[in-house]
Length: 70
Image (cartoon, rainbow, N blue to C red):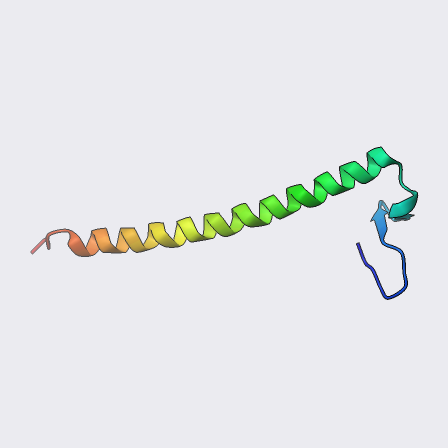
């Protein structure tokens, strides 16, 4: 949602731009829900990246701890 100085926040969907303040209360609530969901998705993506990094480190440590096959 692009906002420039002294401009009202807008929402563009399917090529049509809406002033957020002119949306119904229900639409504004759903917009807020979309933003919250987007934030949660970003947070979970970061958590997944952390878990994948830990997984890779544990896997490398396991490989190093295995007896050699000589």
